[in-house]
Length: 116
Image 1 (cartoon, rainbow, N blue to C red):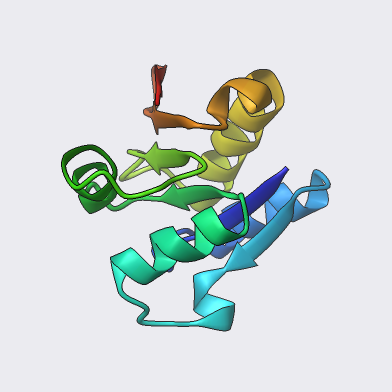
Image 2 (cartoon, helix red, strand yellow):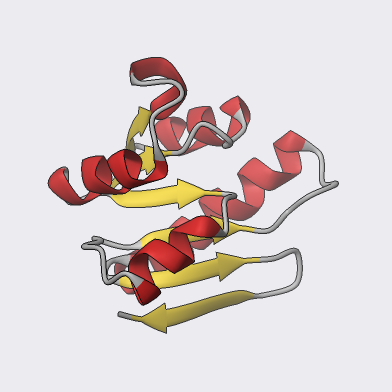
């Protein structure tokens, strides 16, 4: 699976996804400080899921109707990075096909997938 990791995504999550065989473009590595619109466009152009902790992407996708191959919003504040990585990689393994074209929210207790 292909991902674009927003700059607010912990390095451990990016590395864990890569170790699981996913292709991950990290905004921190390629285009730090890119505007949200540009990050979303990059993910869409690459047909990649956007992984972010920024709720503003919901506004861009739903209210402004911006194109998206899928957004995964993580709401895991206060959890150690290694545990966040485990939660995200587990979600990718269990729900991979469902994530494409959807807006997904991952919290410590649930994964909510809203089809686009």
